[in-house]
Image 1: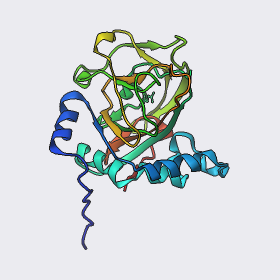
Image 2 (image 1 turned 90 degrees about the vertical axis):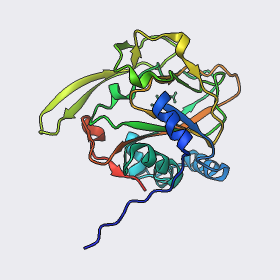
Image 3 (image 1 turned 30 degrees about the vertical axis):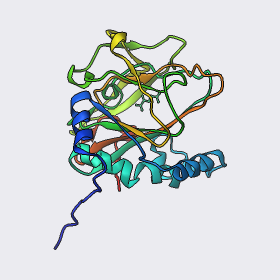
Length: 249
Ligand SMILES: O=C(O)CCC(=O)C(=O)O
């Protein structure tokens, strides 16, 4: 019997891989073409069958979400950084209209604990994004400092919510864990970098890298993004709602 060899395309240069290792993130231009983005955005604007909307799991049902989450350049870069086949944990369409709130700076590991912690993301800009329209912000090198203390964000510039999640560990032990709009309490604002990410580019970052965004202050410019969270094959997600990961590509 022969086993299929997993041979993803090489998307990132050695230098880009190195930047991800050192800084906990890397911005990679041209992951999606303009036509691919136009098509995704056009499909999003149309009415869709109700069964395609699975929330964070819509990449399992919606062909357009599936296309982007499994895209050889998007998932291929994740494969390179993970050193193995990426499995899709969740996907999110992050449209922020003029005046829209941001997401308080956080580490994804707080939201998506996993064992081992191989969590990473690819955040794709579907419009030109920057500090003015509420683009992605990062703290370079923060992936090395462990998990930071948090509180629930209640400020008006950032969304605020709270959910009791069902959890299950590898041994089958089940429990509830309260999660909320995490805000890091010891954040050094002088270290926050507001990234400029052009349409079609993606930002890969680790589950430990501090990131988030501020409100869209532009009166006219939409900020639109699509984010996919991946883990390496064999990783156990503790949250039950995202536990059934699917192999990418
Ligand atoms: O798009 C944003 O504003 C933040 C996205 C984010 O937190 C994520 O993709 O994990």
